[in-house]
Amino acid sequence: MRGGFTALAELLTIAQRSSLGNTLAIRGVADHLHVLLSLPATLAVSKAMQLLKGKSSKWLRETFSELRRDGFAWQEGFGAFSIGVSGVKDTVE
Image 1 (cartoon, rainbow, N blue to C red):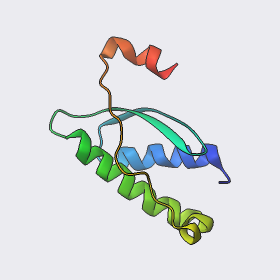
Image 2 (image 1 turned 180 degrees about the vertical axis):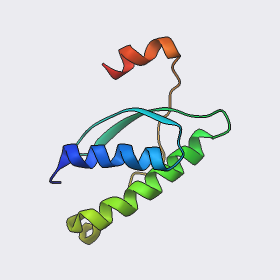
Image 3 (image 1 turned 135 degrees about the horizontal axis):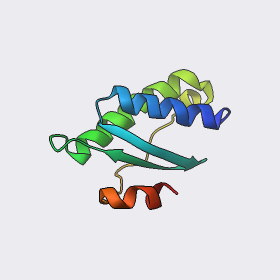
Image 4 (image 1 turned 120 degrees about the horizontal axis):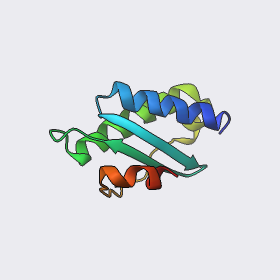
């Protein structure tokens, strides 16, 4: 996919606009992303992932025609881990 850095920056923006709390970091390679979010206590992780995957899928298919043509979809499921505030810096680095 062309414009990888720009795409990650846009995913950050999508996460912020999706009321997901604070997006602290997004890192990725061609087929894999790690997203560090600070979620409000009222938002379930599963709902946050539903919003992020849904909105980002729409944006990716609209922005990159090859993904629309190839039938882009995120993998089913996700992994989630919790960290304390003191672990944010080490996790991001």
